[in-house]
Every structure is written in structure tokens, then in C-alpha cells.
Image (cartoon, rainbow, N blue to C red):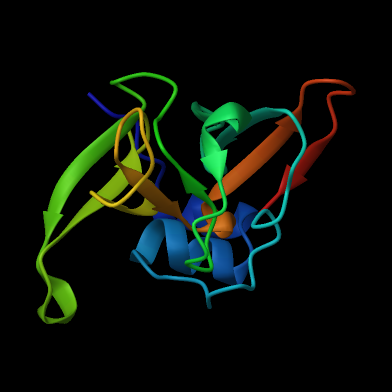
Amino acid sequence: MANQLPPDLSKKNLSEMQFYVTQKHGTEPPFSGRLLHNKREGVYHCLVCDAPLFMSESKYDSGCGWPSFYEPVSDSAIHYIKDFSHGMERIEIRCGNCEAHLGHVFPDGPQPTGERYCVNSASLNFTDDKNGEQIEG
């Protein structure tokens, strides 16, 4: 079972945009995220609970305006939910540990998976493999 944090605790520790994205299932404006152009080697974690989500090796530039990945670190890292909002049918992706909203996955990504995990920077925390520096999205 996922360990979702109480909204009042999350709101205290998150910026307004981070709270909006992760707890209210919002979306940051395209091309605005701090991690969009990050090219460092490392691991992208859930901003809320710090669970590992994506490796830098799976990140690519899809041109969509949000960080894109072609696969998560494991099958259990991501929770998939059908999303029928905004008159569309999409697959929402949430942190497999705490259920924080991350973004959506689409079937138009590169091989080997053919998937594009379109993720809000505001839902991520990046840890650099070389120096351990952490960057919040």
C-alpha cells in the first residue's frame, strides 16, 4: 500500500507549484521546469517521498516542454491511472510509493519502450551521480 503524505504536511514542505502539481494533479507551464534541460548523469526521485523514479540514461528531449523519459527505474516505481479529464483519454502517472502526481505517459516515445513519460519538473528531485548535488524541480 502506498504511503501518501497528509496534504497539510506536504503543503508545508512544498512550494505552491510543487503542491499544485503533486497533490492537486496540476501541470506546470511548458518549457518552464527547472529540470527540463538537465543533462547531468544521476537519478530523478519523487519530490514528495524521495523514491527513485527515473535514471538519467532514460531521459531524452521530446520537444514537448516537460522532461521526458522512456522508462522508469522499475515496474513498481510508477502507478498508472486512466485519466479522462479535459475531454481526453490519457494515462496519468503517479509515484508508486506516495501517489504524488507526476504527469502522463504516451505511446509515442523512442525505442526500446516506445513510451514517453512526460513529467512535471515540479514533481521531481534530481541527484547528481558525480557529486551528490540535489536539484529540486
